Image (cartoon, rainbow over all chains, first blue to last red):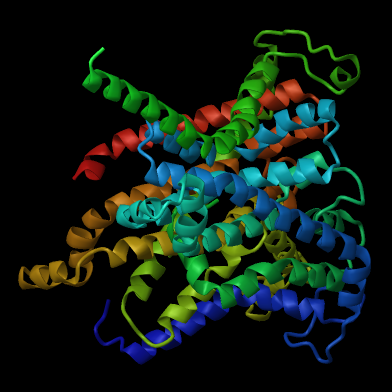
Length: 270
Length: 307
């Protein structure tokens, strides 16, 4: 890089990059605040703040937002229940075949979702799990369980063996050591895994599309998709729903930046 | 039996019991992986050889048809365009994401005010649900009223609206643009991580030998960054190959199949035409392509990984 480019100029360039990259998000906000029926040819800044779009979003998609929230929260719980002990064992116990398990986890993240959906549809149909909260939650957890195990394993490897040994000498059994020593010490990894599990389930589209068909169990991603398929699009309502759907990622990025960065950095995300 | 032998045996038995107990920590995860990854993959391979349609759900009958589904899928007139679209979409997206990500990672590498904040805010497009991104870009790409057409018209670049998503000539490029927008933050993060691991002293030593600017990048940064580049490109390609929501959200595979890829085609075969056998065949071919790519790529880059 040219040494003449000073630190201040870099800051200015960085802000310009940010404006260009985040312009689509500004546009979402702009369109969401326009009155109904304005179409897309709007001013670059909303003239008056109009919340009709938000009212329509709550009316049409309120239930979908609630479904997404419930599914995502329970999916986080399921992911942590399954992934945390596995991550601990793979990090701290000298088990045979650890490398095989790790390879399986890494490869499973690369399997196209459509392959999973294609088979799950038939299985769910026979088991009566189509259009069920449980079925959707368990399917959504497949986005996050391998990732959660891999990322928590790294943090749990950082726990010194001496600490766990000390707990054992104090009379704590394996389960107790795991619950009250390892988990608190691996807090950061657990939080990162939980945040991403939530975002993965909240963003899920494929399983919502293939494993649910009813209005009652329609996550917000599917709600937006159906909005887009309608003949007459009310862009203010679509964009207001999009704003709601974008909230978790935005809020988490602002308040839990550290954990989000750690998760993104691990490279095995998505 | 002598005392030492006894104690060794007890210890062994204890060891086996401990190992068994320790595996219990992993069992739930293994069961889950079995049900939600291993079973679907194996079932999909089987389905690929069956005549598996909507009526299968009522009759329970899925007759064995050998390679018929594969013959149908590969013999279809849309097969070649679909594979071509898949490859163009994957290569175009990954190259674009990678080059912009590398440029930005290099830019943010130097410390400057706001650098860290801006870098983390740039993650937003990647963290959003893809469907949200497609909704926004559908509005930006509207031929007559969309912000992009308006902007280009006001600047005098074009005289009438650009049919971004409605013309078979533009649609694939437009979808790639959106996917680059979504994926750049991911590449930026991984490559930035790789760059920060290169020690500063190497550049100081290199500068003495006249390696500065582009030459420093070419001879110092690039070789040292190669392992990170390999991971980034490999993940980029594999994640793009399988992505489906971005295309369904933007174009649903249209116009005139111009953005139809293997995952979207597989979805349509299974869930719109209810031919799960052919859908399975198509998605199995997709897995094969992913693995062939991963193997070829890893093999081609092995020397640089080892060094």
